Image (cartoon, rainbow, N blue to C red):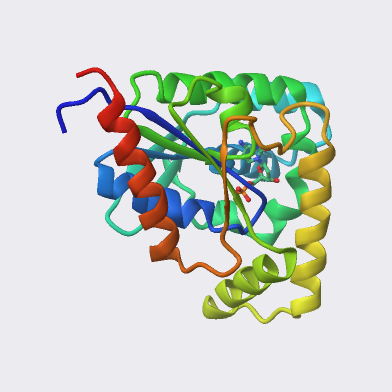
Length: 229
Ligand code: DC
């Protein structure tokens, strides 16, 4: 494209469609996609595998520091490797979901993972999604998007996704889990979910994924053209 590659931060609550949108946006721009939530998930999975309670703050910090998390882009999904092992599916398990909150609230873990994220995006040409990307990880990102959607709509999306994978689950349970996660994401002391003042708000309740991608793609192209060559 000739212009300087930029950093794009996409934040928002659980199941707001961030990952699918961010991945497709990165593909269209030829950028690297980093799913920062996958890193919190990978550390949680490692603790579960080793029988370490995720509430053990010091042990969790040690795991975050010593584990190796890599992303391998693929045309349809991003493969996540934890110490060389493909954990792309395992990090999405209900067990990981059930133990992740203390990991995301652990200030040492956040500090370590934020450093890893900054290192991965140092050269620009990156789309990163999460909760604190525009506020903490890349406050200097050239483009910041905050994606919202009603809790009902997000629960519906998550419920459909689980059903399509053959998981039989009650809609009300998915809805309650979304509300619990929103509460813990918004109220933690370190790296809470918050819209950066300079982020563009995008309500996706009534948008399809291609529509979301198109809107952000246009904003990104405009930003990229504004950069010095
Ligand atoms: O986006 P996700 O559902 O895969 O995120 C998993 C968990 O990690 C979620 O509880 C919030 C947390 N998270 C975070 O605290 N900071 C980020 N930048 C990304 C995710």
